[in-house]
Amino acid sequence: MPTKRPRQRLADIRDNAARIEAHVACMTQAQFETDLKARDAVERCLERISEAARKLGDRYDTDYPMLDLPALRRMGSVFRHDYDNLDAGVVWTTVQSRLPAIKAMAETEVARIDAEVD
Image 1 (cartoon, rainbow, N blue to C red):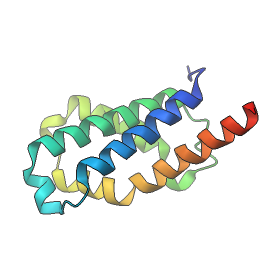
Image 2: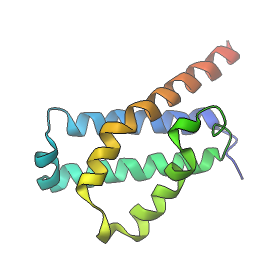
Image 3: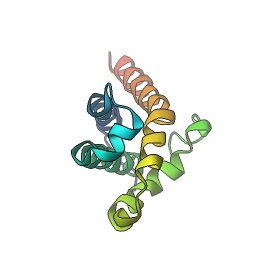
Image 4: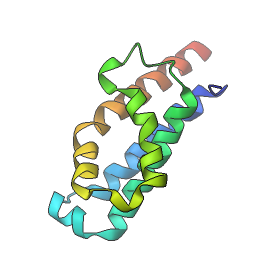
């Protein structure tokens, strides 16, 4: 059942994306791959993003098909169950290539919800 608090879930996505950006700021992929604290932090934030997306359900899938939100929702299962098979390079690529658009979507939708309330 989708959340009754979509603004909160979108804010969770936005805020965890910002945390990831802070965790990897000024890092190269090689540095990220060897920095276990950064990897753990990023993986946890991605897990939260995935969970927030899961709670949102499919309500934004049609508006943002390029984000592949169903895959984002499934990603949490990988972090919870297949954590021992995570590839740091894949995590890095996800952060670099997918995260900016996911964060932008969350910011746009939070602003839209806020404008409706005003």
